[in-house]
Image (cartoon, rainbow, N blue to C red; front, side, top):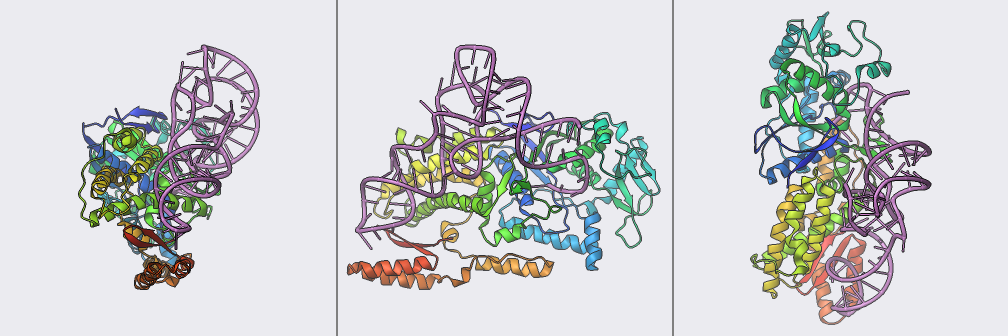
Length: 505
RNA sequence: GGCGGCAUAGCCAAGUGGUAAGGCAGAGGACUGCAAAUCCUUUAUCCCCCGGUUCAAAUCCGGGUGCCGCCUCCA
């Protein structure tokens, strides 16, 4: 079986064949650091995180690069508004980015180039484009001549005539052609600036990616990714810049993720209908968001709502319950044996192969999850109600779980111990987000009233009380205690091995 | 105006020619002192509508309808 990916270039699925067998050079467009990340950014980054994890699972040696755009008009505007330096804004939001995305369990890229650290490479690239007659300088600005690049529009399926007809932007008089775009922008007094052959200025938005991709990964990438909104003009322009110079394809495969919608409309800064990652993480654990993203295909739009998050949480709970049981078996001293070779457990035994089959089909995480749930049902049949006394079942259960664990890992799920997932309140999370909110001047929706819940010591004491009541068959008292805790957001669960507890929401 | 995508049960969501995965919610049963969890059974005679191709279509073709995205900074 072969991995196939949907290539935006050509709009179809193709067998995945990297330039060098076994190696994948991947560049994903990162964020412009002028504000906190929203869940749209989260989706994009989770999508590519899963792609990287899967490619590695498949045995590829992946070099993953993702940039920070740390200089641009929006950063400068914000800096002016706050009366601080642009680099300070960039620094603040890069830190915030890590704060949010490390919690999401996103792999750190192997290379994380920043535009401001590649000015010489950018200037050099612009210089060569000018020398090649592909670009021209006017009053300190440098523009790319779109008409001089025959392939313009091949990624987005546009042609230059239609683009002109549909142009909604005021034409800059200094451009030779309305379609031309800036490679280098001259700076106004007080703006961040770097020296260049055309005077003081800063890079245009698109050129940094061309320069950085070329420097760190070479002329042709295996995968170039980003959100759907980057197809035009960003990636189209990158192609013009890079291929205009090298004459070789910028990327073999172009992968673009779909949007997060709110009420069926694209979530975006300009529409104002967005939630920051931070707000969301104040209310649900990072895994819940990851599960939510993984339950749809990465190219489909997904509608974000309280309900969809709640459903994601319910589904994820089911998976964590399996992990909880595995931890229970381990704690009881069981060691993995093997899954019984009978048809009843075929879904479990076949899970790794089915998972790969689904993921090979353009990273179909939704189908892959379906197979994992099938496997979980089979695995639950092996679950011992008391691991300490059912040694054989416990050993078989552990064997089954061991087969699934790496697959969950590919999706970045079940990263926490189950005890933590079920028993950790999110008080600490609220504190973190509130602190950062103060720093960045961004409001954060209050999380659930986690502070009202009883702590572990208190809960264990009540469990002991209830145990005593049950021992003397005083079920009215036992039920009263359980209901009381239930009302406080704590769920008690009895089993042969004893009583355990979980926070409900 | 140009280009592209989507429409599957109460909700979410896979499925691109062979007779509807999975999750959530719901119903019944088993287990349990009772719950919860778990297991078993069950919930779309049918995949927006109308034509067509085919032995066979949710899946292909044509025509509608509805929704969305890009064409402007944007994951």
